[in-house]
Image (cartoon, rainbow, N blue to C red):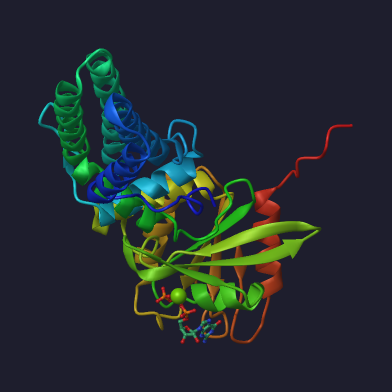
Length: 334
Ligand SMILES: Nc1nc2c(ncn2[C@@H]2O[C@H](COP(=O)(O)OP(=O)(O)OP(=O)(O)O)[C@@H](O)[C@H]2O)c(=O)[nH]1
Ligand SMILES: [Mg+2]
């Protein structure tokens, strides 16, 4: 997963302490003007290298798979405070993160510029003046790093929120399961997947998103249960949930929409079909309507009828979904 390997982000204070203590050590190894020059160089290099690394560790959001970009946006909107942009606008999600990353890039360059400027000043200075300039340079570098204190904190928070995203692979076929609460979505997913289902916590839903895997003809399929997202009308979703649904739109190769016509789930069949229609409108992928709990009722127009608890036609439904995905594996070029 692309955000998994992000290292921890240093805080301003840590960076400054590290740079200045290393600088002091390198100064002690020399004497006179050389000691001052060495201190300036060590502090400047450590600060600018570390600031630059904070930024280069991140993938370029301009080329990140749209599924991950939108998912990251939903996660960050839900977990990170907004940021005031230069023009007074409120930045949120990935935009706020990118703005903070570019502030940190700015800070790294600023430190380099200070280092160059004072290098010049130290060149022919007497020891007393050199010491004064070197101290001034340190104070200005510290100011720059403190100026991006909240940006570094924000980047650290973003990293913590994103590295726990579940292992969803945009390049593997994905079947998204949708439908009102209690219709049997989880029962179906559990019946057709291996036991290694991963339940991922997201800041945008109180319910975990469940990801299961199954294999057909040597192709691995992801099957994704989306409680809290695709289980009620779109106008009841908040911005963050809509964003997450939008991410699923990039991911889904087929949608299994589960309906319960027995009334046991507590929702009228008409409301369930309205939600189904809005999912059809919202997703480019084929949507298969499945009537579950056929042991109780099959009184609805559907593409297939099953009973998960009786084990009736569950495999048939899975076959329909796999066929709808119509996956063409990338064959190595001949
Ligand atoms: N009679 C009958 N009951 C079923 C069937 N499939 C599931 N159920 C029952 O329906 C209830 C809800 O099933 P779940 O799989 O938790 O439903 P869900 O859609 O995942 O519900 P949420 O996670 O709340 O959205 C459970 O009590 C199941 O045992 C079925 O085929 N027939
Ligand atoms: Mg469930």
